[in-house]
Length: 471
Ligand SMILES: Nc1ncnc2c1ncn2[C@@H]1O[C@H](COP(=O)(O)OP(=O)(O)OP(=O)(O)O)[C@@H](O)[C@H]1O
Image (cartoon, rainbow, N blue to C red; front, side):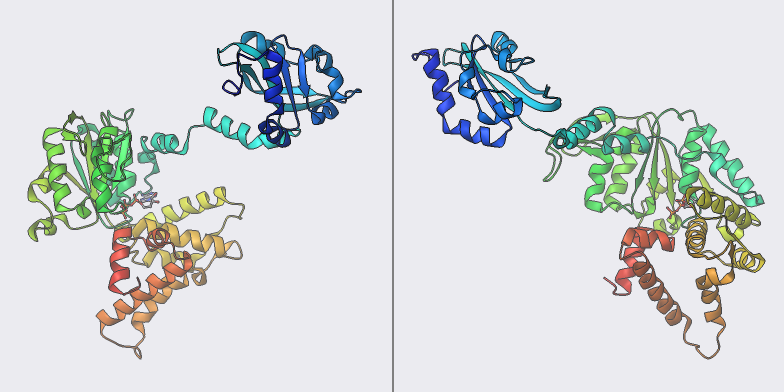
């Protein structure tokens, strides 16, 4: 500040007087709690009245002109500023027992010589600084959300110990998955929605030689087609409109050395299938808008709830990609086929809900447990989890009764009622429409949450909303 408004042809006193009389000075002074101008020997040239009052100086401010700054402000740093020529842009100074924010700058003439210094006292209350200090602390010490997401994203969240189940089909599943973990080949997890394919993918990575390396998941159904390519392969700086100027690293590269989990791989468009095939074949790819080939070493675990074989027959899925993915297929059985596992899962989940809330432990009575055991769980473990959680939160006493699972029972009863007979397809469509509406209203219109509550993927949920003309 002030370099250009100070003319070296004038005596220093006149130059400082010019600054002091500048209307800008009044403006600055009106914003702060006090201001001071000193000459190059740290003698006071000007002291604002506000500052004098703040300092509780007995005499008229004008009386201090020409005196060493320390006479008025014993702990002043203005001398250091004029001697070093370096500003102290943000500092704290104790004035009459109160900490204040101060700014001090040297004043230079147009020959760059220090001819004095100017200081402002900004805030009487440090409270004003709190947001700034907090933000600074956050930026310095705590990782940003993006960094955190990255760190979380790159670690396996589950191990085999997290996959609950003791039924014969599950024991066999775990045995196969453990084998797969040792083999370092591509794995294809097949099974209905909510059966735990993602949990298994994490567990396989966790038990593999790549455990210390990243685990990176991409959900083909959750990301719009237009963004998926950049998400996958990354983009060179300015590769497309709206792309980060700095460019971005794709998930494939992030997974280098580790495991890339392709969730809902059946939802991949044909054009991206072709590009993915190249990655699988050559272990190399190009980021969007770059001509550079990047080599990677990733292990692929893919999962889908769709019938890939059938999709190959109908031309929706490339057969060469299917064979590349199908090296080690693992079928994850639906919950209804896991004998005895519902009880195990229920016990486990209820303990989790209880630990995570201030609510008392609640468990289903015999009748309710029978209902949970025999229900056909189209949304599998996810549906069981959501159903139980809702019941646990809304139940009154320590016992969960069939009334707490009324919607499961209702679904069964409806089919039994003779008087309301209508074509099955019509009845099912109607029920589906109602469930969609119910979910939307329970989740306050949040579509992701609704899809989750219903135990279906977002893509499926959208398809259904469209089919029933609910969007
Ligand atoms: N055997 C299990 N033990 C404990 N929790 C499980 C088990 N299987 C699934 N879950 C839980 O159920 C939910 C759904 O599991 P997950 O997302 O792995 O299913 P998915 O088969 O990948 O589903 P989708 O095909 O819809 O993506 C998750 O909250 C998961 O933690």
